[in-house]
Amino acid sequence: MTDSTLKTVVVLDPETHGYKPSAHNLIASAAEELVEQFAGEDRTAKVLDQDERHRTSDPTKCGRCKKAAETARDDDDHPQTVEPVAS
Image (tube, rainbow, N blue to C red; front, side, top):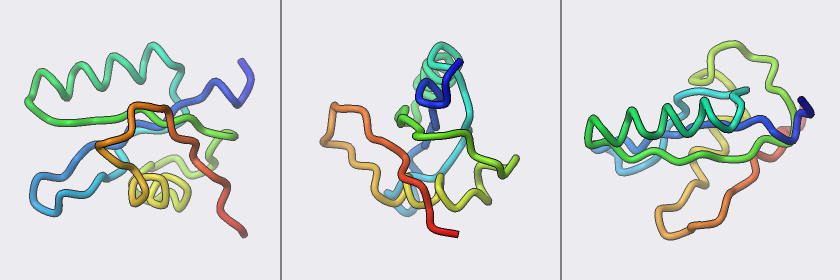
């Protein structure tokens, strides 16, 4: 699997109305399953494309995931790409 096939899942926080990282480094099918699971809980989630594997094991502490979550939009039906964060 190439790194370009990896996905990040962000979920909408109902209190802040912003997205927060939920999972990263997922294959597409696992990401879609997670989004469906959130939908079953009446939660909104999105799948974002990753440019490369994220090294941080915890997506809630991952700088790339946090940045992607901050820029995630509800009105965009096109996949977004998680941009690399400068070290």
